[in-house]
Length: 202
Image 1 (cartoon, helix red, strand yellow):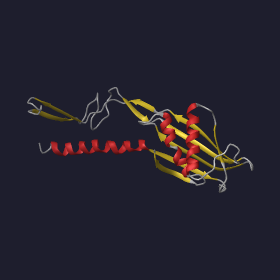
Image 2 (cartoon, one colour; image 1 turned 90 degrees about the vertical axis):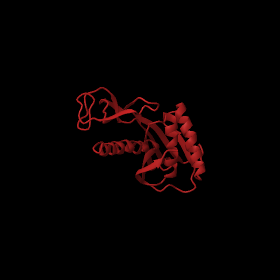
Image 3 (tube, helix red, strand yellow; image 1 turned 180 degrees about the vertical axis):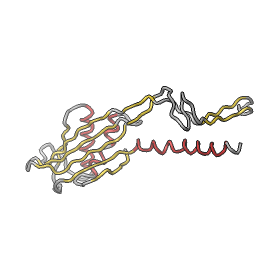
Image 4 (cartoon, helix red, strand yellow; image 1 turned 135 degrees about the horizontal axis):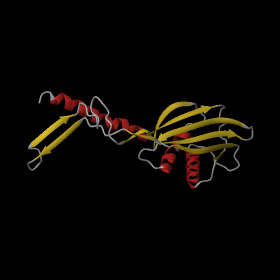
């Protein structure tokens, strides 16, 4: 029994590390480049690259966020904020179900009168501590990512002032809510240069 306890602690540590790795699904990543200063008190027009239903929803979100940040939104504005939504489908692999620890209990009212634990060191089929195994199973290699691109141009001077792109994993989200959750990060950083800045999806 004394030899089993250290093994159990190692396995519990591995299991406990799982939720920490999944926390990234509630975060996005922002990059932005400022080419020219954004003039103060200048109106902005929001323009999607295509008029899909989802883009029209995101357009309204951007306009509301801009007003909330103190910008004026107008159709004939000299500055134009153009945006595009893109996605990159994730990849999966058939890697098998790897089992390190198996617990079994039988008998009694709580099922614990005959209990045993099996620590799997090596299993050619399912895999163990020392190998991955050959069993069938689906593992996500790269998650599906969504990206919101935005550019701010001065159409009167014909020059680009600012550009930004945000990315976030789909995770437990659906496409439109995930894209809408990236809008605040874009508006909050207009005119700024940002490199790989994480932000909370909200």
